[in-house]
Amino acid sequence: MVYTVTFNPALDYVIHTDEIIPGETNRSKSEHILLGGKGINVSVVLEGLGIHSTVMGFCAGFTGKEIIRRVKEHGCSCNFIEIPGLSRINLKLKYDLETEINANGPNISKDNIQELLNQISRLNSGDYLVLAGNASKSVPSTIYKDLIKSAGKEVISVVDAEGELLMNTLSCKPFLIKPNNFELSEIFGEEIGADRKKALFYAEKLRLMGARNVLVSLAGNGAVLSAENGKTYEMNAPAGKVINSVGAGDSMVAGFIAGWIESGDFLHAFKMGVAAGSASAFSENLADKDSVLKIYSSLESVK
Picture 1 (cartoon, one colour):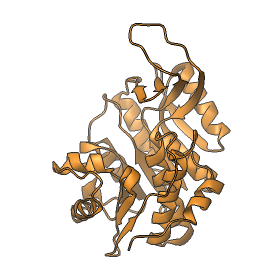
Picture 2: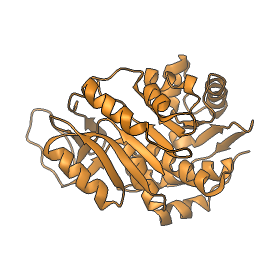
Picture 3: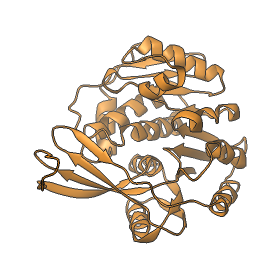
Picture 4: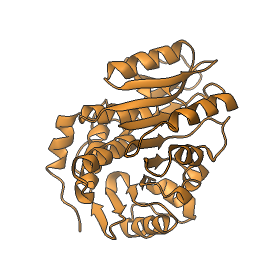
């Protein structure tokens, strides 16, 4: 079973408009509401690829109830801990630019954290634990490390996070981490940009620091993978028009996991990750299986 954790889920209110004029009343051309939260995105894409998962984390208030309803509507199991407050509503403005306003979300207490740790401790050998996105400001930067330790060594951990949240997990030897080029630059204080050779160099460093496999997304320049089998892989980005970049990285994580569960082969998992990430980027919504497989068939690794 795959379990994903989203500390601070949201409803993303997406508004399309021709322009934004500060200080004026602006009119929407169209709007819709999407589930928000990196762990949730991973679960939704996994479900579409035929891999069932359980969504865990925290939710609050009437927005929390709507998040739970929508998670179940996608076919995922749901085991959120309900807490006081109000889960987030994030505003996503789409015009000639993409502008986002993300809310803070509810406070998470020490008792709430302990309840989640207790849940995680009941995972079984061979289960996957996916820790994705930023945790709440009210929890320590060691929280992902604490969750991995609570799960135990036989649980397969995947981390998609920034800064200390990510770096603190390396001593636990997570199966997979997925920084993007900007996050990699921030970690090492070195501009990565679209340079795949540099990305692989620093991915290898992260592997030496404890991560078993390091998948780095480079947006329009594809992706690289430093794998525990001693090989490195590179992939060009497929041709296509980027419609919505939100959730592309989460989809890459989901695609990799699905590919690995299917085959235990790093190249297949890597291609599935790139295909799923691209399929989401080329769509208004998260990737579906048909679009992922269509892109997959067009991909060729660089080496």
